[in-house]
Amino acid sequence: MQVLLVEDQPQLARRMAQGLEEAGYGVEVAANGMAAQRFVESTEYALVILDVMLPGLNAWQLQQAIRQKGQTPLLFLTTENGIEDRLRGLELHEDDYLLKPFEPKALVARVRKLLRRDRGR
Image (cartoon, rainbow, N blue to C red; front, top):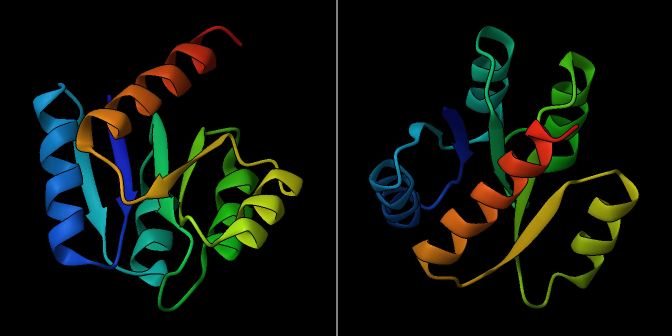
């Protein structure tokens, strides 16, 4: 299964991608919103993981572009202080969110949960 990871912190993106790959997922990484939009326009993903705070297009703009293509599950990454971001995401129909910092195992568990739920739809 192919996952798009949109994260602008290179070290964090590498750790997350490695954890997902070790769990058997194919991962493409976009470092900003514009790159992510190009990926989304050209490829179908089983899941998109979006950092809320992105340069270029923000997560909310990307969410709109992704939703125009279909119902791909979305996992938002936000900080513990980002309660406004979490509330906004829930209002805009995000599928789940994960608070930073987190362990790669927690990310993989959320991804598995979202993909199981999506298969059940």
